[in-house]
Image 1 (spheres, rainbow, N blue to C red):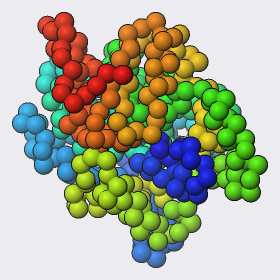
Image 2: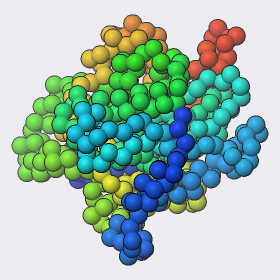
Image 3: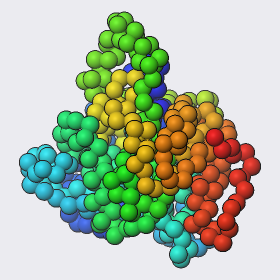
Image 4: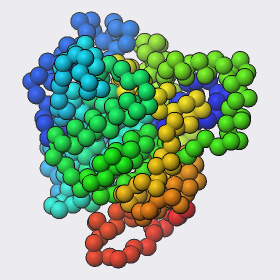
Length: 417
């Protein structure tokens, strides 16, 4: 979600770059639907060499890294299950937001599940803007030692369905993600789960827990976007910047829903190289923690490229959720007094998301709330410092994984804010 970095004087691409960083099984209908998206021409001859099949294949290659270090209680042949969970279908013109398109095909949420020991609590993981569930590839193995892990691609991203995005307001856009997630929950017959969301996924998770608190045992928000209200000082600086020609251009691009993905698509075959430059810089030379190994970086680059180059859908939520400058139109802090679910915030020490917003929300909340900071980590704390991130999640969920312990010491290196 660092894509919303408020250094608005940077180009739109660099502003958005940081965020660059399945109950029903896939059916025959799903396969035929995917086949329709494949071009007659070989990938090498296409301007945008990708398809939904490419996304799924890249995901499989990335998750093969997890298979090598999977805990002993998994079968080596099937360490995880990938599903395309059907969330329903509707005719063109349906009032259901994600069916407002020419297609009446069923919609699917791409889902990966890692089983754990019997009676382990369920942890549902939701990715941020521009990312997909594969971004958690460094975490699945360790977290599956304590939880049943279910990670999803939000509707319109990753390997999930990419229906036409027809929302025209903040309310409709929030409902697009909240209601599609609820339909997914029903299809999976889930209840009483721990919900973890990163960045924009944290915003969606918090909004979902507000609407459906009866299903969420605990909320874990990792570098969540949209917590704080726009301060007067920031508003004044933004107003002055908008008065400049650069500010006017960037503001126009924002309101036109210009996204990083459009840049990648516009570059066609060259888009892959731009993504490679980003991943090798952010998770290599400029990493705030553990550098990605060569093969990991290559696999993440390929995965990210295909998720970016595929059809525009969920990415178009941007201008409806945030105003120019990355200020949420409906900040989470405004609804903090209404929260009914115990909440833990997790931030990297170098996270550009300000943990002080969480502190403001905590003062208004009527449920237990902790704020944990992880060293040697930025916004992608779970990639930068996976060990510290896992310790933070285990500590946050100690009452579910260690029910006989009334208290547990905060792991070394972590701090409470």
